[in-house]
Image (cartoon, rainbow, N blue to C red; front, side, top):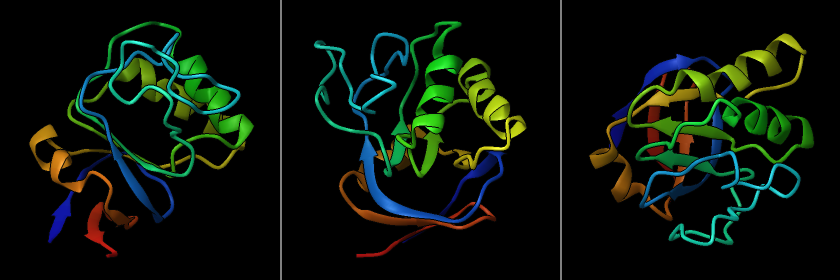
Length: 137
């Protein structure tokens, strides 16, 4: 299976297990920026960590603070290896832009339809710099 995501913010090639969320998430109050764990008690993946994963987001719940949480995740070394988004979230992506301006390594962010994300759950993925997504298992 080969997919290609639309590059929203470029980054280095990345590999990791795909954490495909089954519900939208708010990074503000939903993800602990120190541990990288999902802390929203109502979220189906509560307790799982986003660090080092290919994080597939079927949607986000907006908050102007989401960019700060993602920035903190990058700074703490707890960010996803790559982010796949059903729809671009400019506020969330701003966190990656600021991290890049600070000189910190940032994960790539790509647009990939939620319907294409779901079958990737739990699979080992490689995301190439050109947006190509391949299965490693």
